[in-house]
Image 1 (cartoon, one colour):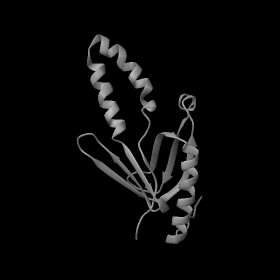
Image 2 (image 1 turned 90 degrees about the vertical axis):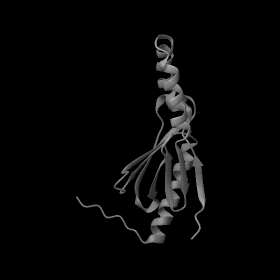
Image 3 (image 1 turned 30 degrees about the vertical axis):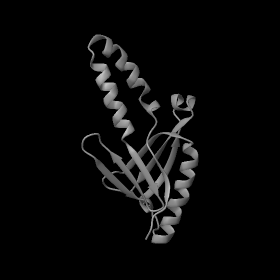
Length: 140
């Protein structure tokens, strides 16, 4: 069965703005700040997400790579967050609560037009649950 891509990308570097500001005095005093800033840049740049109509793939790592996979039917709840600083630059976060044991909460940070992606994800999750025949039952 072929998978169709819904979205592919990585977080914006704006999520590291505070860290980069902290690196400026460290660079002036110790010279270490520049190395830390470069490391953080590549860590964010190489953190990729791929969302298909069946699953979410998260690729991360600089030297060693890790790929985590969450089936869409395992997503229980979607949340769209717009922290103040990210709102200033037009970005937002999506937080997914899942039943996946290895990754129960997945955060996709620093997204442009995150509200549109959240709606696409919501539709894809509902569609995948219907295809798989998955029903959610909450016990209190």
